Each structure stands twice: as structure tokens, then as C-alpha cells.
Length: 462
Image 1 (cartoon, rainbow, N blue to C red):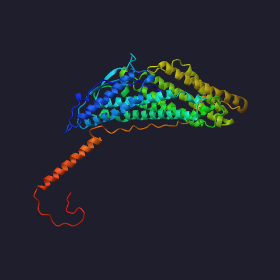
Image 2: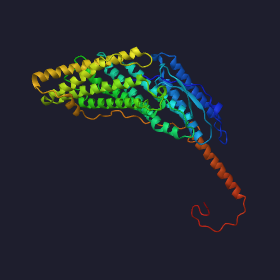
Image 3: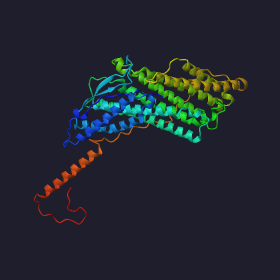
């Protein structure tokens, strides 16, 4: 999983630059509340910078962002209705490549920029929260002393992490499909401002795909939890009864590989524009390397499970296919293992690199067990030719998504147009206006009413 470096933001007071244009000056209190909510967000982000990774409180950060977003929504709606003015915000970017390997601070005009960065940080925090959950459960599947209740509790935590990643994917998609296009057409959109990679639509879409792939990766682990526990003393064939169908697992890995590969291509696209500056538009090499490595790993694992499917379900006729796919997977994993320093992500790089290398080594060890078994069976019993890689490629099925993204649900604005308070105030104003009009009408001399019928509403004119 990818661990994001979180951005930080500069201190501002909305009251210093937002003028309340509402008829009854009803927004003054809300503007102060918005300043406080944003100050809480800034404080939480700065506190995170001073805290070691293992002690970071991502859950509190998520709650702080959720409290701030309704205020941003209210400010945006009020600006759109000319109720209040606009300002420039500063945020420290974390996805852009730069020669000093630090996070530059940018002044970004308009409330849409602050909204986009707040949502971006929200998705980052959810992803990092999922990461901490995964690290906390450890490799529980290999613990022979674990009880069934303990194992199920660990699986429940993995499910929570999957949910956080699916939510993060939905937030990234909302930023790319709604927030950034709305910013481009809004009256506060800057005319000569080049967005950093953090606010590039291709990069945002890449992050949405990556989060979904990370979620599916965890879902695969959860699907294999019981069977891994059942077979961790004698791994390899035959598969335990609790094992999920190998063809199903292969399709899940194929989809993961496609998502990571697509995300990598989108991330590379952001820096290929001829008018884009290297520092502001190109995505950091850490992220691109992560996507490259994960795509290759899932390609290898998909070939492993296609080989296992042929070996366990195919009988004599597919004996050569089982050898071919597992050999292909073996070669890919050996290349990953021997490719040197594979992963560097912000702080605690060494720890995460060790986790990555252990994952590749364990995958290689597992596929070696299957390969040796299927090769021996084919050499002594099946005697089937091993298909070339080009022929195996033609037999690879399409992928399958297990965990769809969760669409982001926009919270109601804390104030301004669209808020509950705004609708109540408008309703009260209409009622007062209607009562006043009725009182004025009663003072005007009118002729005696004509006889009317007795039906409900008789004599009333609308």
C-alpha cells in the first residue's frame, strides 16, 4: 500500500478578506466558525508533521476535515451567489516532483483551490488510516496459535481498511470529475495559473484507480485469509477446501494489474505536456515507481493462479499449461526480487522497502512450490507440451472488480445557499412578506362581495 505525505497549509482568517454581502449580514458568525474549523485542520496537519509515523492520528485528522468541508461548501455557494468575496490560499504540494525532494508551498487563488486541497487531504488521510490498520494486524494468517475469533477480528479490520480505500477512491473521482471542472468554469478561476500535479485531472484519476487497486489487493488478502491459515504448515497443492477458486483469484489480480498500469500511464501523462514546467507538473518518482512495481507484482500473481487453476482443475490435458503459467510467474517474481532498491516513499523508507521485499520473496517461495509440483507431475504422469508464452497470453481472461469505489456524498453546506439555515430563513422571510401583503390588502376599500357557493375555497382568488 502507498503511504502519502500529507500537505500542510498556511494560516488565514476568512473574516479578513470575505465581505458579508447578505442582506441581513447573517454570515458573520459562520465565517468565524469557518476560520476556526480551518485552523483546526491546519493544526492537525502541522502536528502530523512533528509526529513519527507510528504515532500519527489519521482518524482525528479525518474527523477534522469532515468538520471543515461543510464550511467550504457554504463559502463556495455564497461566492457563487455574490454573497461574499474571494481570497488566495497557500498549500504545500506533496505529489509534484522537484529537484530538492521537498514539498514546495504554492499560493493558489480561489476557494475552489482550498476545497480541492481539503478533499485531497481527506482522501490521503483515509488511505493512510487504512495503511496503519493493515500494519497493525500483521501477518496473522501465519499465526498457528490464533483463535477463530481473533482471526475474524483481524479480517474485520481488513474490511474497514478496504472501506476507507474505496471511500478515498470516490473522493479522488469527485475531485477530478466535479471540483476541478467547476473550478475551471467558475468566475474565480485564475487565467494564468498552472495547476501543480496535485490538482491535475490525470493525476487525480490515477490516484482514484490506485486507491481502488489497493482496496482490491486487501480484498484478495481477506479472501485468502482462512485458506492461508489452513495451509501455512504444508503450503502448495492440493488446495484446502477453504480456498477460493484459483480462476477467480487470477481475475482479481488481472484487474489490479490493469488499474495500477492505467494509473501509472495517467501519472506519466501529467508531465508530458510541452507547456508544463518540470517542477509543477511531473509526478514524483516514488509514486510512479510504486505503481510500476504493483502492476508487475499483480501480473505475476495472476499468472500463478492461472497456472494453479490449470493444475488443480484441468486434469491431464492442462498439465503443460500449469507448468507454463507458474514458470512465467516464477520468472517475473525473480526479476522483481533482483531489481534492487524497489520502493522509497517519504519517511520510514527502509521499513516499507523491507515489507515490499518480503512480499515479493513470499510470493516467489509460494509459486516455486506449485511450479516444482506441476513440473514433476507433467514430467512423470501427464507428458503434455508446455505452451509458449505467446500462446499462454492468448488464454488470459479479463479482470474482475471485487470492491467498487464508494461515491463521495457532498455534505450539506454549514451556511449560505443550500444550507438548512438558509432555507429556514428564506421561508420565514416569505411568510413575513406574505403576511404584510395580506395586511395591506385588507386596508384597501373593496366592493361588497358577490354571493358565492358553499364549496371549499369559495370566494378565494389566487
